[in-house]
Image 1: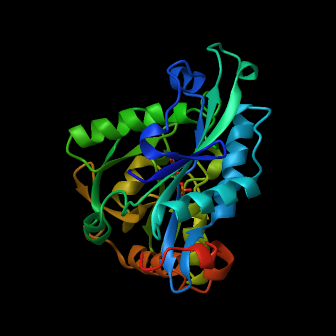
Image 2: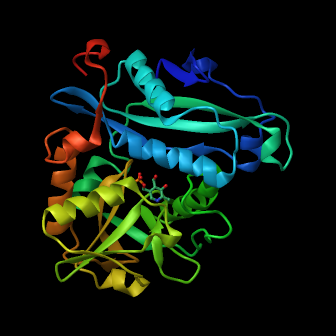
Length: 311
Ligand SMILES: Cc1ncc(COP(=O)(O)O)c(C=O)c1O
């Protein structure tokens, strides 16, 4: 997660000096907002995948949290992201904007001043390249996913991730790779940092948006599936529907697309990435690297004259 510089409120700060004070409402109460974005190398140089969609969700997350005077527009944030990637000389990298609050402690967002930091680092697929090839073993978490009227699920608020961290840590300590989390009604919601899809008899199913984060990779996969002529249905999914699926796969900016080979010690389908997941992953990787039909509408190219060659 190392880089030369981190962008903090308009300044490019050397990595070791990018610090905030211990008295910070974000640190004490989990009231920050973040995004997870990736840039990929393409034949036309580095490009950021669906940057404007990520920035729209970032601003919406801040709006949902209720911060009223966040000072940066999507365009200003976009320019700052470009600047941060270029100054660090990255081609393919992960991009982490964070809105954090400066000011006295107190349970009142109006006391605090919103700030923006942008970190970038070189990072391969979150669950590993091997996981993309062979699939992972997931558990169904005993912890419930966020209730939509407690921690709002459309918002990447830092505090929401206490749930993800507890679930993921328990999964890893128990020997699994990732966990499926059920919503407060007991239906499949999502994973700790990924959305989930189920394939049965050639149809793709995914939970409706009400109690999940509206993933941008989820939307990408649904669009690419439609392009391939594969029907996608949004409907409630039960835990046992995962066990009897032909394929289960999860999607996210960090993980990209990864199949479940087992869930709760039950083999899923053939116990390996299935044909629909593999077709979607191939098309996804082509698209993010500038080789897909949809690449022009989804890629935000870094300014060429300043980009670092050879990355
Ligand atoms: C809880 C949760 N669900 C789903 C996702 C996938 O979203 P995206 O595809 O936009 O990265 C993420 C990652 O941001 C997440 O944190």
